[in-house]
Length: 138
Ligand SMILES: [Zn+2]
Image 1 (cartoon, rainbow, N blue to C red):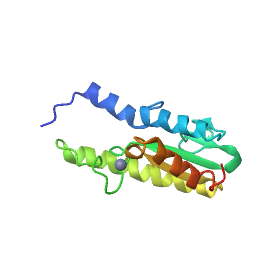
Image 2 (image 1 turned 90 degrees about the horizontal axis):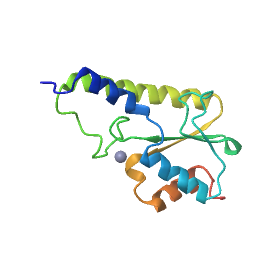
Image 3 (image 1 turned 60 degrees about the vertical axis):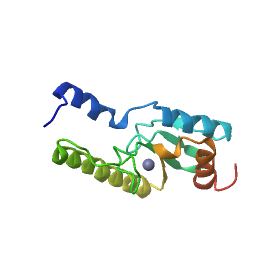
């Protein structure tokens, strides 16, 4: 039985691509420390990426493991109630992510995803940014 009200569910759904979350702020802080220049949430790009590095033509998304179904991650668990509804919604998110990545790549952008579970240690974030955004040169 579903215990979540319609209003609550709407709020939850709106949160899927919520901005300025803790993981996102952690990534911004680390990118800044590495001296990377970036812009936020460029609406003129598919998916309004969380961070955009114009000089490196790289778009970065900070994805929640649950909502975006981080493959093999313990946080991407199966919902316990109203399973069919939620799996359908989550599948829609994944399909949208794939489409967004394709659209960006078609425009010549490099697309990087940092998962929420990777944002707990600053070193992990720094390693990903150095490898995927700086090309080991920042
Ligand atoms: Zn994860």
